[in-house]
Each structure stands twice: as C-alpha cells, then as structure tokens.
Length: 266
Image (cartoon, rainbow, N blue to C red; front, side, top):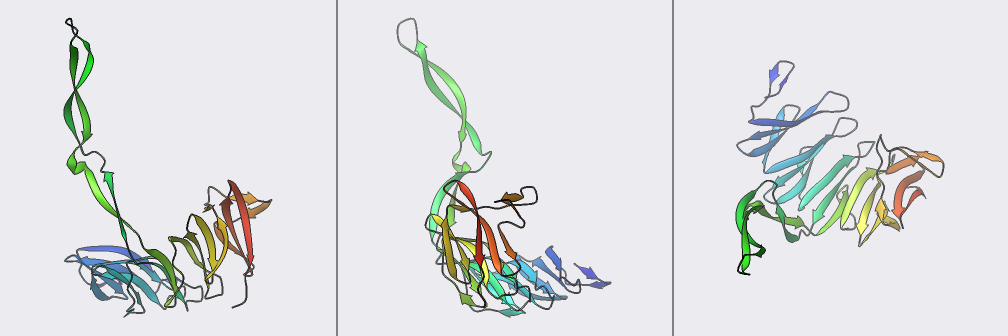
C-alpha cells in the first residue's frame, strides 16, 4: 500500500508508476490486485482494467490522464472520464503546455503479420553424421558429432501489429501513417508536430499538414549534440526558435539537413 502523511491507501498485490504532479500536491499510481489494474489518483482508486499505462498529470497539476485497456481495446481516461472511442493500442500521451489540450498516438485497423523468433538459450543437443573421408576399402567413413540446435520449444510465433498509427488531438483524429514518432505540442499552441512514416519515407507533420520527404529522422541526446551549418542544435530532433520557427534534423541521400519551418498563426 501507499502511505501519505500517515494515511494508508488501498491494499494491492503490486504497486507501480508512482508519480507526483508538477506542483507535488497530487499523486497518481497503478495498483494491481487479483490480476486487475487500478489507477489511484489522490487516494481514490478506479478501474479494474485489463491493463493501464501512460499515467500523467497536466503541467498545472489540475488534470490527470492515462490509457486503459478493457478486453483487447484501449481508450483514454481523462479527468476521471472514460472516452468511448476505442483503439487497438495507444502510444505517447501528453498535455499541451497550458494544460488545455491532450494528444496521443493510437493504432487502428490492427492487422497481424506472423513471424518466428528464436528464444535465446532454448537449444538441445542432437547427434549427426558427416562423411570424413574413406576407409581402407574405399568406402565412405562416417564421423558422429553432437551439435547444438534449437528445439521446437525454442521457436516462438509472434504477431507484429499492422494497421495504421494516427494522432488524436482533443478527440480529433488526424491522418493515419505506418508509424508516428516524437509527438510534441507546439509551444503556446494546440497544434502538435511529429514525424510520420509514409511509404518508405518520413515526413514532418505540423497541425495535420505534411512537410518534406526524408530517408529518416536524426535523434540527438546529451552525449551527441550537433552543429549544423555552424549553428548549435539543442533538444533534437525537434526544437522551436522564439515560438515562431520549427527546427529539426533529417537525413536524405546520406546527408544530414537542418530543417526550418515558419510556424503559422493558429
């Protein structure tokens, strides 16, 4: 259980994902009991879901959101209200900087592509025979060997999710793509920006509008900062200059490009 200021919370078999609101006044976490998943916000538990994830508070701490699964479908729970729209999966979930808007990525039209993988370490020894030459009578000489090879239990059938990934902003669905990545709100806007895989190329999507076609996106981190055209690039792959210009790094024809897009007014 979780104890706050001496007050005991509900008892669970397991507790995960404890997170404080940005102002440290509120607490959210996941509790597992009898194989059911509950979300506890401010000491009040709700749910009994098949799974939950992406528990998050808004920047002002006044709102809470998470993704929940019932059966095989995922849906958004926002401000203690379950949204009716269901999806095959939900990915990134975030609030805008002013806490007024919510966006998330979702998978729809899920298909299945079955493939095999070998689970590490699941082998067995089998005896084989190989021809190692000829004996004194000119007949083939066989040599026995013991070799390690996967046993039948070592192979596992997996289903890869198909369908399309799309971004949902305030319950409004945007266009579907093979994949979406790096979902971010434009500072001071309700619009979002993200990378989307379209065919064999990647495009930048800002407010539902596509920009460019690139071979891939370029991610940076603290140990891999970059200078592009003599300019220092922070917070890759996306950053915003004075709230009026969007900047990113992309790869095309083996070269790295700095992309700058003027942001239009709402």
